[in-house]
Length: 128
Image (cartoon, rainbow, N blue to C red; front, side):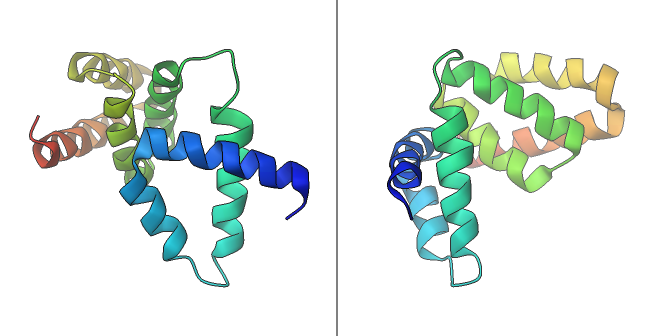
């Protein structure tokens, strides 16, 4: 890894852990093998270091955008991860409800229904 990418990776790792938690991130990185390790490095450096760590938007806002985009893309597994991250970033249940209701108009009822279902599952797991 060259120095510039290494710097992005380190910055991204810090933000990724702040949002998703040490346990989740450590597990994702430590369970990577020779096939998936480059993806973990890429996502940490570019997704988290070059995007999430940028100035201009607060983490809470980025989380809210992720909830909407992942609903639109119907990416349930990632949505659950980012619902947890959104809670860590201060997004409330009421705000999530409004995000998913708003997404229902633009993404369709089935996508919003799945997002509500997954959010309830995460809330239950988190004791909320």
